Length: 207
Length: 223
Image 1 (cartoon, helix red, strand yellow):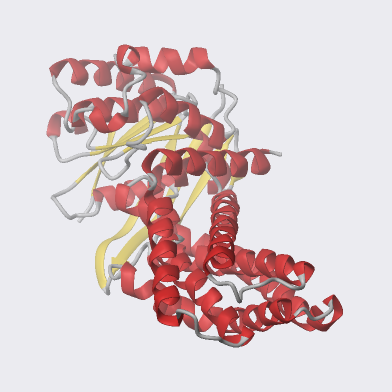
Image 2 (cartoon, rainbow over the protein chains, first blue to last red):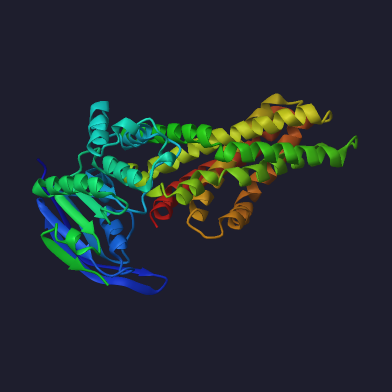
């Protein structure tokens, strides 16, 4: 198993001349878990996007290492699974097509149909695999995002508002995924729900 | 190898998505039919020079392209799927995937406009086929190259609709002037070598546009 580490130094983000957050630093080495907490608009989602490499920070730097070897974010993205309310999958495709297409684009070694079946079964969507995503409820779409995030067996799982739109059964499934992830890998959760923040060993406050 | 596989997978995804949603295709087809019909009614039986005819030919292609080619990035942004694509593909794979798709779409629309012009305008006779085909090919790819990077830029803006033609026009002026001139040569039946200068300009434009876009795309895509 790969040893993964993420180190952030003095991260700051400005939007339209106003500072969202500043001087965020942390270091994580697998296994580790971190929750990002703060009020609405404090920049939790922005920070989780910066860690995922989807957004640049205004100041500061973030480094990623695999087996003590520092790698660029474009390469490191293959180790990241990301779930966020801002991330949508393709409405015009079925659940199965979404995972097949995105897996092909990622050119992942985990693109075999068995893995896709396993992930859809895990989030209890296998029976609805041939349904167009636009017909899904918001909770089903959230489950599908988990299947997408876990498809390539990521060493880092970053969850922004992990239980939003999920029913009790869905939360149970996700809780199991989270517990499994933090045993050996890195888990980062951005939330303002205290219970969810408590799933993680470390906490940082933004805003 | 991974880069090529990823790029082709993006092209395939966009083709399937387009066939299912018909986001761009319907808009392009309606625009072509409407604008060609309007020109037909305006001209009626009037005799016009080959310069005017080739100008109107590229006007239809320009405005049709402006109405449809931006969809490639705007639809990803509007539907919130940009993030999923950012997570699975490198910026260069996304750029070349979208560029190839837009090239295909522009070549298809140029061919459709050509067929309509041949049917609707008796004076639109291609006397030098080699000049015409090469002009359509280089011109369409040039349009697609410029349109793709501008679409990526405006997809992040609030005023997408108005910004697209405004930003595109100054960038496309050298291309439009060159393709109009060489199309007129094709309609006049000039020999191939007379259009070599125009082809050199088109090839240079294409290389500069693709190289510049490739360098710029990383910044545009991430912010």
